[in-house]
Length: 280
Image 1 (cartoon, one colour):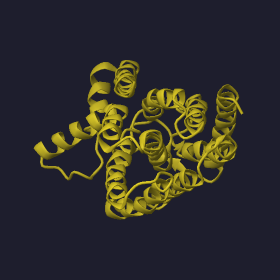
Image 2: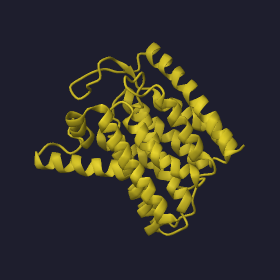
Image 3: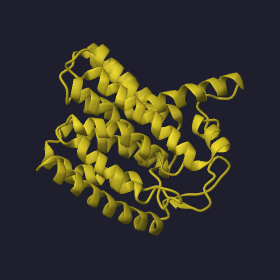
Image 4: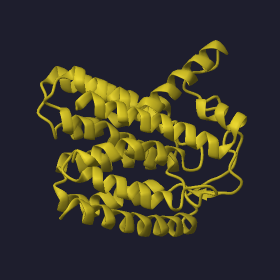
């Protein structure tokens, strides 16, 4: 299967699965309801992550997708799905991600120390991405920039191409006013994808290059995480308790949704361009 066919198929399948996820989410009342820190106007299905996972599992095996990568993706989605439905404590949620990351890491030959470091960084990166999903179209758009670069270099076979297509298919229903959200299931899944693909691409290139690549591809989520930690620490608020003190919240209040998305997506694209320069 060529990359062009894989991409087109992933967009179509991703859009179809997202539509189905909306229908199922509403029928099963898997809805994210408005609240103090959830400013959306109406209850919205949080089942978008299932559509992205479904696309990866449906097409991934036919484009060279590594079994460990796909199993790790499914496990990350499962952690987020349980958190969406039942709610997990921060410590339990972090602990549950460790097996998924370890499974995915076995797609690359690493010594035990390097594997442990990669998984530890994965925990940080996944949760940095998890908290980016706070505005319509934000998290998916932030993921799309790095995925374009990873797709161009063929990271993970054509898995990056499929992931990009799945994200764009999902975004058709996620731009404002969003008809579906990623949910924790989707934000953890995309975080996992953006963690494992650079590892697959440059896993044998040395920790410095992989580390540099991760920082650049995760430029906006890392910037947002640092901003949040500084704000909460200065206000002496719990570091792990959700609120609207994110960088994108501050931008949204000042500039509105469209300008905020443009700025955040722009930072993500800038990081992807920097990553391309690092590995060229």
